[in-house]
Image 1 (cartoon, rainbow, N blue to C red):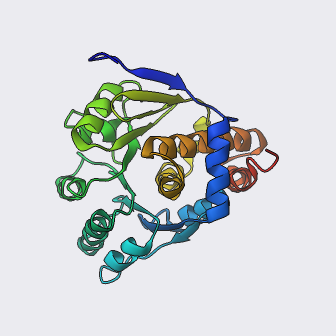
Image 2: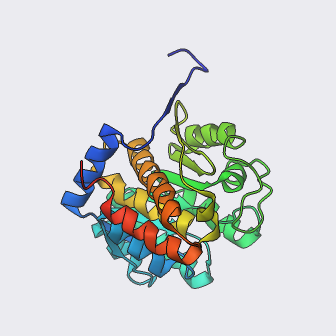
Image 3: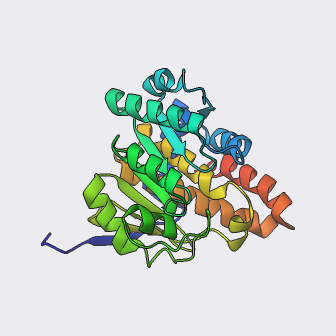
Length: 267
């Protein structure tokens, strides 16, 4: 492959490799350490359970390092970060780096506020396996102007793809951009994942919980690129199916968990 060339492919459900990765996850039930924001903790735990992994919401700064060493995957989401949370996150990321525990960084609203941006810069030193965010967050993490509006994105996922490839090359992490179409890249390979539904943007926690599902897939897939792809494909398919059943955001949430827990059963 020559300089500047890239491999691009679209992956959607059902996909044989994704189905096999989901089977491995459900058979191994990976212990997934989730340090996430207070708004989405319960929903995230239920999403991880629905997929087939085992969530642990260990948040105390005195415990996160020890737990990150024994967990099989780790999510750090800075959504409602406080000083105490920051200590817990840095302890966990440092321990994960030392123990080679694969982990996901979700840089919520990076660039919008200086405090959280500084914490994210510190966390990046501990080499996350995957960086997952919306387009504005990925733009801001890469050093470009993301035009973030809190945790919401004001850019499209395709607009952030060049920044994502640059960020992947600079950090060694796989970068996953959530949007109308998800894009996942290791800097050379670009995978697009269509599907999902607009209603997912109206339910708190759908984006944040995707990071936890990626973390659950990390120990059972061949590469972080495969983990992010499998999680995104399953998420998009479950969201699309749930939207067909839902009357609104409340029933969508229940239908989404149902779809996550049953997807792939017949395969």
